[in-house]
Length: 83
Figure 1 (tube, rainbow, N blue to C red):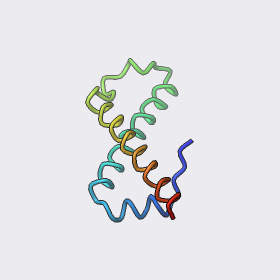
Figure 2 (figure 1 turned 180 degrees about the horizontal axis):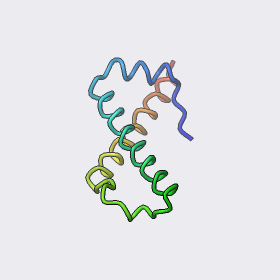
Figure 3 (figure 1 turned 180 degrees about the vertical axis):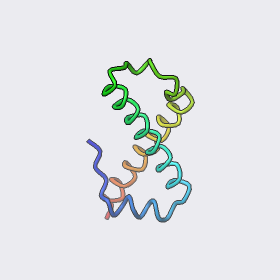
Figure 4 (figure 1 turned 30 degrees about the horizontal axis):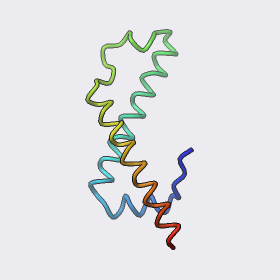
């Protein structure tokens, strides 16, 4: 389970506009994909039945955002250990 203290994440988002932009973009793409999947499940369709699914470039971006998020989490843990 990912666990980053809210105050540390908020501080990183406030101090690094580039990170914040990428973080919120990846989060919105992830949530939109989940919403599409939920809507499809409620409508009784499989995820392959829609034409507006995420493309592979978008999935790569989400994957990259996840890797960056993991990196930030490790840095925060390291900083916490040194404090």
